[in-house]
Length: 167
Image (cartoon, rainbow, N blue to C red; front, side, top):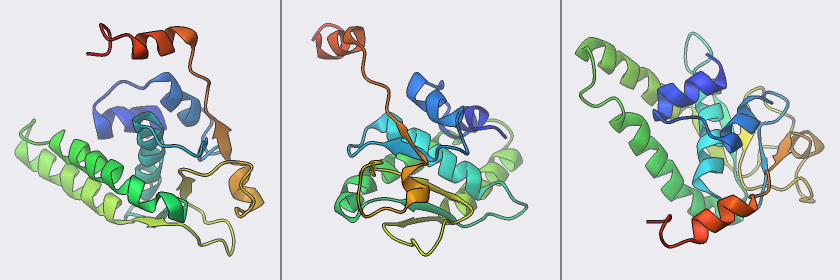
């Protein structure tokens, strides 16, 4: 399953520009060069982690690297991600299919290992969240796999800051 399709299956939402930038450049890029978190950045990174965890016959261990200083900040995003993932399948379609899908997603979710360091060498399956390419304490293989976050356009900034459109 490609990353765009995984996004729609896992989250039930359309793929946005930020998501597409990462998905279309995977596996060369496995996260964003950004020291801040946003829902879009988390969702794109999380979808890639879950996609990798579910690529095999059985769920595969996949690392989600996060700086130690951001570990507490990531927890609410993980909780919202899990809630969105599982509530999406609640009460929809054939019960047997739904149960099988939820069980598979749960197994994949369990195989995502959240951590800040395991830098003995590049793991086969991994994504990174909250690191910047310029960070001194990350390995070269991680830094070179971080994609620049596209700058917010003036129109996006105006719409976000306009009280009439941000309701």
